[in-house]
Length: 152
Picture: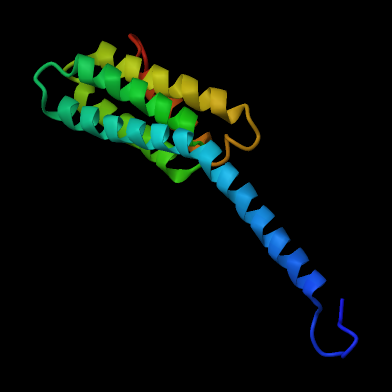
């Protein structure tokens, strides 16, 4: 509200704006504090996915690392979807599959199945499933090809 002198807002208008800005700051702070644990959990799961993918690629018996990579990729997807790091975890895990399929087909199938199940669950959500259709189709195709009697 302008002051009687005409040019500047009065002290009441200044208090309203500063109060509104402070309330917006508090709302933003609460939202950040509420989302931070989920974000950190997802990024940790992505790091574990990277670790197990790297270990499985060089291990003579990659089974346990492949299963762990699938597990952590599913956790990263759950915590981070629809953000890009969630999809990155799925891509890393699915990229591991072909390199270990020759050495340990059941482990690759477990990896594909776990990632596929999480992708399908997330695709059911309108918002969280954004951009995951291609990854879900890829996981499904790889899982079918890895099954006994599946077509490559």
